[in-house]
Length: 106
Image (spheres, rainbow, N blue to C red):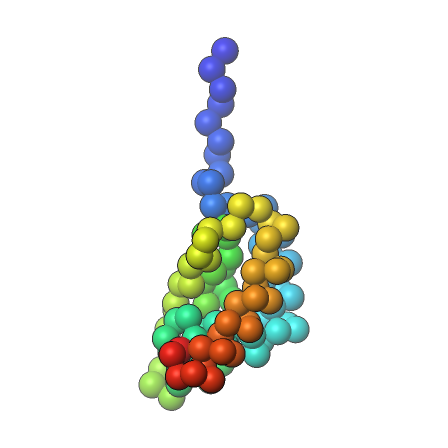
C-alpha cells in the first residue's frame, strides 16, 4: 500500500511549539526579536518588533520604525532539522546580531 503524503510541509513545526516559542520570545525576549530585525532584516532604525511566525526554515517578524511598519522574514542558515535546535539557534543568533550591529554590518 502506498504511503500517505505528509500533510505538513517539511519546514513546519508543531503549531503548539511554534505558538509557545513566539509567546516566549515576544513576552520575555522582545529585545532579542528587535535585534533580529535590525541585524538580519536590515532595518537598523526599527524601534519595536514581534515574532509572528516561526518554522524550521525561517521566522517572520513585524517591526515598527520612525518610517513606518513592516514585516521581514529571517531565514535560518542552515535550516533547522528539528524543534530541539530552536533555542540554541535563537540564542546564537542574538550574539551574532549584537556583533553585527557593533561592527556596523547589520
